Length: 231
Ligand SMILES: C[S@@+](CC[C@H](N)C(=O)[O-])C[C@H]1O[C@@H](n2cnc3c(N)ncnc32)[C@H](O)[C@@H]1O
Image 1 (cartoon, rainbow, N blue to C red):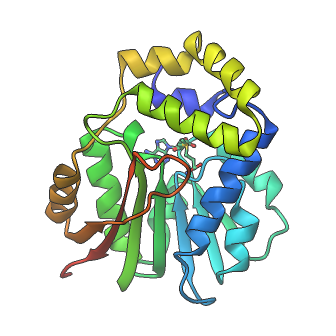
Image 2: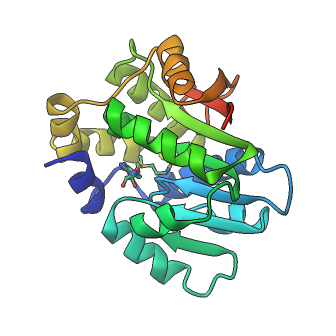
């Protein structure tokens, strides 16, 4: 099984409905803060279940949702079939999207599932699609020296304030026996030192800096704000 298979299948990454709602409420608010104008055309790359899409769409003119998992896209197409501002893209549609047409691209909690090569390809694609003055935001990047303990501590903190602590304990136990943990220890997650991420971005034509706040609940992880350099 690969990470792509994992995300295309059934999983219990959110410990209950409350965790799911609070997660998307939080990242929705964080992403809305990045939208500077109601005329924004934005892409959520690796959007997952996109539980904050309605909120985000209310702040911009057009919201494109892209995820490599076909089952995720099929569900999103059902959920947002009648939404005038939200469009779900598959891989050919994303590549055919007009070049330099987007103001903002957010890639949140995705690069840990990509090899360095795949991440480079995504950075090149984003460079093609973003307007010269547009911004690329890469959130929830896992630092090199961070282990599962940091994630568990952050989840418990979120669960205590969010009122789902017991569910988080049970969820953690379930995770121990899950494909997620098996993949995490076999394939692993791609981690970056801050400088390493900045060098990778620079190699792909981006000038970037680390944001003071990470998107979402886990402040041990990093968010980068990048602008395209040159052509
Ligand atoms: C942890 S979820 C993040 C979902 C959402 N961005 C969020 O912050 O809640 C990771 C998502 O990345 C998607 N993904 C994995 N590899 C991808 C790739 N190469 N391109 C686009 N999406 C990818 C998965 O299908 C999954 O939906």
